Length: 382
Image: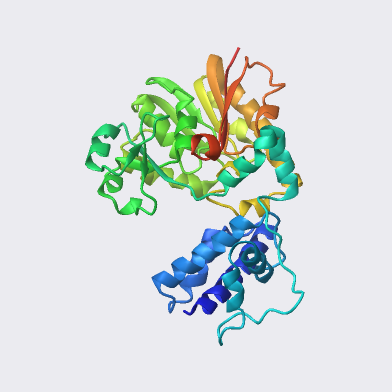
């Protein structure tokens, strides 16, 4: 592909990303994969160059653009003027530019989200936002059921110890983790440092009854199983059958046998967990959220979120806290986690929950800690 043809491909992909962001469609990664699956003529260098351009454009524009062409023009004018010379440069190039052609405006996030984050960060908001749009590092958690991180780190001098975790390592960017023998043997799992910190906050102990209330594919569940040394009862719950089904193969590879997956009926979660009411030592709530702390990985999610969708997420989070509290025995521990930095999903969720004691909380950000953004809060049942 010529540079102009790569630009045309990026515009076509961005058109699809923008529509998907507006209509709750597929993620940008999925759209890129689908695009090239039907274009076998594109080589590895072409695919990599187009993908990098697509994500550079997404990161550089705060508001959702009208279309891919306006997105690229706005990005080019602000950050890469040489791209403008490729318009009309050959038979596979995008059409020539015309005088006065509209362009998307550069920015860090939609204005309403900048305002929301400014309520947390104040005058530091631009630094925090800029860090949220950098490329994310590659972290893994060493599976303590099978290995010690110091021993694995000794075999890989370019793998760095993550100082805020007991089992975390940071790998060089671009490492093909799933091809590593350590991955195949279940010695490591891909998991961001912040996610590891969140799971460790529950302080799950051997012999306890523990519930991961929003387990998804089980990343934090496996961390809890390692902390429990596979002793006790660990129940992994979710309403998404496809995501929960991924836990089985992952737990077998990790040697974390005995985890109980439980598919919950949406809207009837309490009934599905009635047998555990008042019986649990600890409950982890990794609640559905805006994902504003993970924009480094999914920058187009800035274009997906609306105030109405945020309101729905906030309501769901409050419901999950009430549900989690109902599962605890007196003195039982609850940890509420969101990979969001919006106060509406953080501190504002902690008030007014009967039966719970005083909350303690912390905020992690890419700018301050170098990991994904998280709000983590802990309390106990009275």
